[in-house]
Image 1 (cartoon, rainbow, N blue to C red):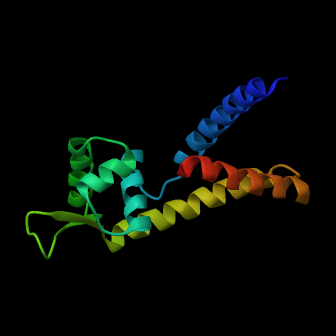
Image 2 (image 1 turned 90 degrees about the vertical axis):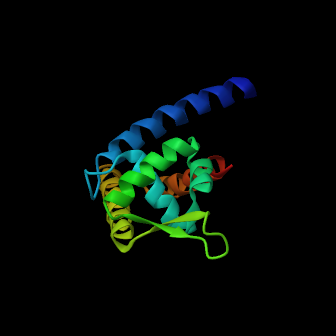
Length: 145
């Protein structure tokens, strides 16, 4: 197999495995009242702190109006707050609340537990588990680019 063929085959295999795994993990939630997109907003705020709507939209690769709708729903649920900037009252930041943080933490714990349980169903050797750790690090590099 040539290098371009190997690259393409690897990309296809990773895409399929990643989508299937993501679909499986999405079923594990701490709250059924928020969408995947809304959860992503909460997770982004938890990871990066207070952000403006435009920054959130850019991070999540959606339009500002789409992000505004997500933030409206999250604010209505008490999961985020709108905080005016101290230096410019026209500028508003979005901040996660304690309730929002609790949902992210609980969902992440459920995801990790579900994935650990799925891995435990197989009798992976220590070397295979190390290989999965190495693959995770490589996938994170690609995802963060």
